[in-house]
Image 1 (cartoon, helix red, strand yellow):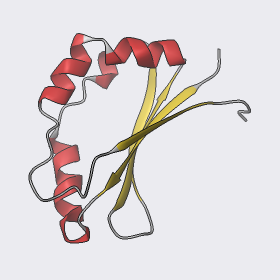
Image 2 (cartoon, one colour; image 1 turned 60 degrees about the vertical axis):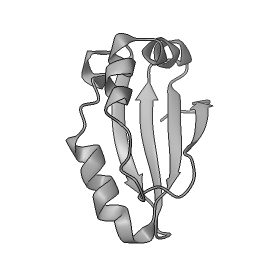
Image 3 (cartoon, helix red, strand yellow; image 1 turned 30 degrees about the vertical axis):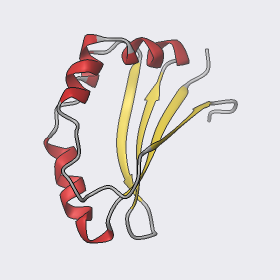
Length: 101
């Protein structure tokens, strides 16, 4: 099976980047208890306000199982970003690794 990567792209009000990062650092993800989860990173881009949440999974099936799990519901129940931080809605992209080294 190929490693699977899910990324949410966020456009954040450039003046609120610190608030966005604090919000993510304080939330509980519950990922550590999910089968197939490998790692997570919140990435800040070079362009002001550009962020990506990046999770890596053993397989697409493991990621899809996470999206249907109680852990997913609990994590996203407290994930609402405070007003005025996001500019628009996040955009999900997913990828399967075709070459890994």
